[in-house]
Image (cartoon, rainbow, N blue to C red; front, side, top):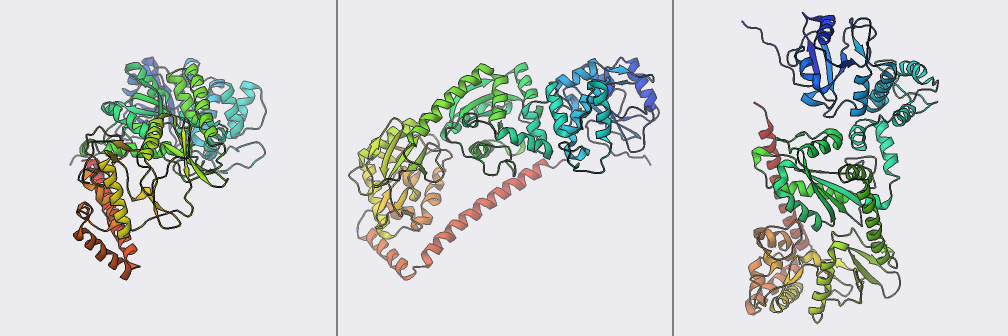
Length: 620
């Protein structure tokens, strides 16, 4: 029988052949002229205690020579963790280089050879590398207190880091200050050996000390910095750049700058951003290196009330996270089931956005962006200055503010990139001003309009026969006047205190040729996939439009809305009205049941898609 050895996954963990031994391994590296350094716990080498391993940093150019000496898949008795300068060929730490490039080069350039022939960092680089390991890799688990005078979070660390670092600090810097995480971080920062903010953000997800440090800096950013974000499209999604640009603009962002990356530029940005972690993640395929970056501006960011906790702990503008998820879902539908990949990433806050922009575009470009953001946000705030009360969660194109003076008015302020929607709303309200339920603007400005406030307004869960008739008449008037009521649904209808219908938003209403019927009404039928009309994003497919937007509110099929307003149509509505009167409590329940059925259907489809994705990812 042949013995079978379990293969280890390829990672930084390697194994020195037993027949070579530790001493023989280091002699072989010397013969091959490999530039390396054993990072720590080298005092007893070539002897190592049971259960310990060797942590070793190697020059990128010498990595292949070193790997020719060790095994990567077959487990033997002498473990060794190999880290290269840039983390190439899986010699990384959690998907990113073990140290910043500057620190790695300093360690290798200044390494010294001990009497036993083993190369190690000189005292200064030994201190800096160990301090980095404690602050950025170990955190509270190192047993080092956060600040002087406090008790360490862990009493039994695997090594006595405080004592070792204190001795090195005295030797190198002649500094007898108490060792703490804050002191070590400050020392690394003064020596220029800290990682970029993107890397700190990545490491902070599993390092509570680092997370607190990152959050403190994030809380200090200005509103103008918070308004600027970056979306990065990866190589494999390069064909959808136009879709991404359009999607971002429809979701409330103003696309200010755009830049493509190829070759060495793409590799540089990948190494610099996201901690260098551009792998495939949980997907079947890698999305590739960064290909295109969009700088976007949001003058009305959605603040994160849970900053420092939860899934989006470092996000200052929740709109970025919401849009990123929607955009990934949108692009996911374009991918084949067997070839799924992550198409894009984004910055989480103003600090990560600044770092990316300054690296990719230059510091001067970021300074210009800040000035532009200050102007745009100033215009937005000035338009809402006399309207202190905000109404609800602002839409992608505009925000609504309420005055406190009687008679109360609502000022609808439009974003700078959405002024066409403002013009459309003013124009369409004027064209339909003679119809009941349409409010004429009380005042207009460069980026706003004012309309009457509807006190005690409420949305309709189920439309009565009379309300169905009113809506039908309104849609017929639109059709006859050559107006397409795109994105008009029952959610755009409110009841005032007297029970009259009021129509709310006209941003997507657009001119079309006059028609005598509702057969091609975008309100009831939606739009085809290819159309010249402007539409919101995402937009429901044409086949599902009425079912998704209207059925649970009318509880009558679409063909009933198309019947001529004769005895048949009126008789149908009268019978439906009697049902509503007799079963007063049943009708809203039926509406909720219909909605629940659609929700269950959507959840089942999502779970089936997720299950298929999991099956595809199974290996073997």
